[in-house]
Length: 401
Ligand SMILES: *Cc1c(COP(=O)(O)O)cnc(C)c1O
Image 1 (cartoon, rainbow, N blue to C red):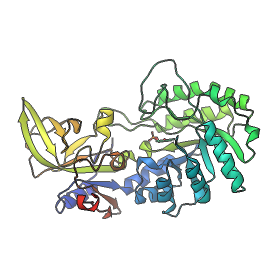
Image 2: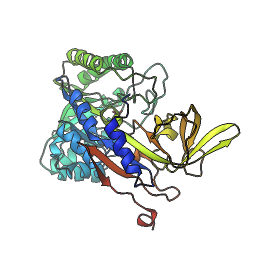
Image 3: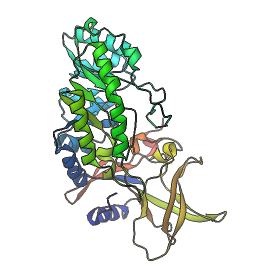
């Protein structure tokens, strides 16, 4: 887990001198150098899963690093195209592709799709024919694993993502002349930190996928393994071993004889570059516990409530005092608004700010911003010594009707 660098800490400190509300800050210099490490290889073609963080400057940084873009809605597509990105570099995944959405995507020039149902295949064919074009299609496969492990993406439980191999095997690919079925897509495990475990899951996919390709009589040119690479949210967790990931991917590429391996990274691409900076409202003692009440909570950063995993938290200023355990709470009138248990200096008070790190992915746009009518957080970027506000705060009178 990277430590808060001195220049970023001082940029945040400067902002807190004029701010009263929580805000996000993304370190684009750190993002750029991290992305460079990811693209410095020829094993896997990388797409950015826009849902992780759709902020314009984040998308632009990914673009400059050579990533392509995976979008799952018309809104995400619009945001990517607004950054001047060629629609031919966009891939559309997602379980809810209506006929209307497919039509809109084709009109805007997107030609690569992950099909997640038999209807989607039929509707993509109809639309491609109408547009007199041929689309690049991957079929999304959902496998079952014997050991019953839970995972936010479903793991081996039933999800709406794709279809089982048996359901796909009835597809007659030649019935869809405007679709070039180039390969298969599979993604069922999120936030994995163990490269060996991931490698073993990928290994177990090889046989069923090759068998399906054979049944469908398609030449498997592309295999898309989705995302799922994790980042540590606790100090004692190690970073994922990226070189080991590349070694397993290389092995899978040889085994499956595909021309291209694809991944759409979200969390691992952008997670570490973001900070959520949150004013302390007060400290209080309650039933023998130390509680900190913060100005922002799951209305700005929902993830702790849905995963029960907190973002790492530190006091912004330096303190000589001893650290003690605190429970951190947001401002919402629900016990769900809980940002974790953290060991922090005991002299924290109402003038202080808490900095949450690892917040670059699944932060603001994953949250529940309107509940209790608080101000929506602003988003800042830090780059080459400059801090810039990309999205100003939105006050309730500007969103309530
Ligand atoms: C969310 C998503 C990703 C990104 O997942 P991460 O675990 O954040 O890398 C990739 N592919 C698809 C289809 C997704 O829905």
